[in-house]
Image (cartoon, rainbow, N blue to C red):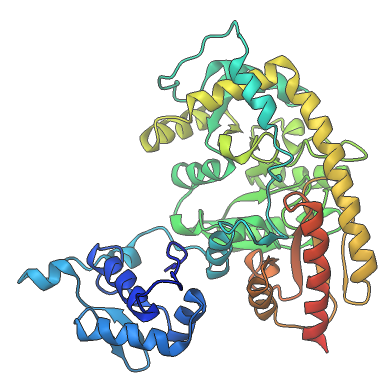
Length: 483
C-alpha cells in the first residue's frame, strides 16, 4: 500500500489529521482499499505522511468510529467495511482473498520496495539494471520515426512469430555472433522476461527443476516458481558456472533444463571463459540437458569481444537463445527474441498469441530499421565507450573509499560490479537505512536468499554526480554498520 499519490497541504486551514482521514476514507469508499486490506502501522503512516504519530491516531480513530477499519490485537488494523458493505445486506467480495489465491507468486518484498522506490525521481539508484536516460538514443529514435523507409509499416497484428522483416534482420545480426538460424527459428517477444514466462508455460512440467547459477537474476523473479517449478543453484567461480555436478543433480532432482547468463552475468558481471563454455556444452550434450542461454548483455563488451555464445556451438538444437534490445536501445521498446528448434518456436508462438496477440508492431518495425540501416552497430560502439568510462569512474571511487570495507570484480562488459562486504553486517538494515537517505541498493539476497555479504552495483543508470555522491555515502553507512 502506497501513500505516494497524496501530499498534505500544510498551509491549509483543514487540520492535517482531517486531510489524512479524508484521503484514507476516499481510498476505502472508492474500493481501492478493499475489505480485508491491512492498513500500514501508525509508525509507517507517520513516516509516509511526514507527521507526528498522534496525527495518525486522530485520523484512524475517526475511520474506526465510521466503522470502516478495525484493529485486531497482535495482527494489525484492517479495512472491514466500504460503501457497498455499508449499503448492502450481502457482504461484497473479499478481493484480498482472491489476491492471495492467485497462482502467480508475489515478488520478493525487497523487489517490491525497489520497484516502488524507482518511481521517485529524486532517489539515487545504485543498482538499477538499465541504461541511464541520458545514454538512450532519444534524438536518434525521433529521427528514425521521421525518415522515409522503403519497408512496409503496419499498425495491425503481426504474425505469431513476429514481424518477418524484424526476424530477417535478427537472423543477419546473429550471424556476427556465429549463430546461423533462419527467421523460422526466431520468435519476437516483449522482452527477455516474457520469453522465460512462455517457456515455463509451454515446455516444462510442474515439479520439475530448473538449474541456474548461484547467485542469479532468475531468483529475483518468480516466473518458474509460479508455474510450479523448483530452482536449484549451481556454484560459480571466476570462469562461470561449474558444470561437473550437473549429471548427478539432473538424476537426483528431476532436472528439466539449465538457465545461464554466460556473458556479463547478472548480478556478478562474470564472463564465462571459452574453455568453460565448451566444458558446459559437453556435459549438457552428454546428459541431454537443454539450456536457456540469456545473452541480453552480449553486445556490451569493453576492451575485447567476449567468446561467441553457447548457441554458436550448438549442433543438437539443445539451446534456446534469448536476446533483447532492453539493455541497449531501451527497455521501453519491449522487444526481445527467442531462437531455437522450429517446433519449439512454433509452440511458444502459439502460446504467445493466446496471451497478448503479438508484440508491438511499431516497436518491431523501429528495431528492424535500426538493424537494417547499420545505425545499431554505430550506436552500440558509442554506448560501449560511455559504459567503459562509467565503469572506470565507479572503480576509481571504490578504490578511494571502499578498500578497507569490501572487495569487488573488474567487469569486462555489461552493467554490474559485484561488491563483497568484508565484515558481517545486516544487508537488510543497510538497504533500509540507505533507502531512508535516498539511496536505492540491490542487495545480494534478491539473487540468492542466503547471500548476506554482496551488493549489485550498476554504473549504467545513475548520473556521474549521483554515482559519486551515492557511493561515498554508502561507504560511510557500511562503516557505521561495522563499527
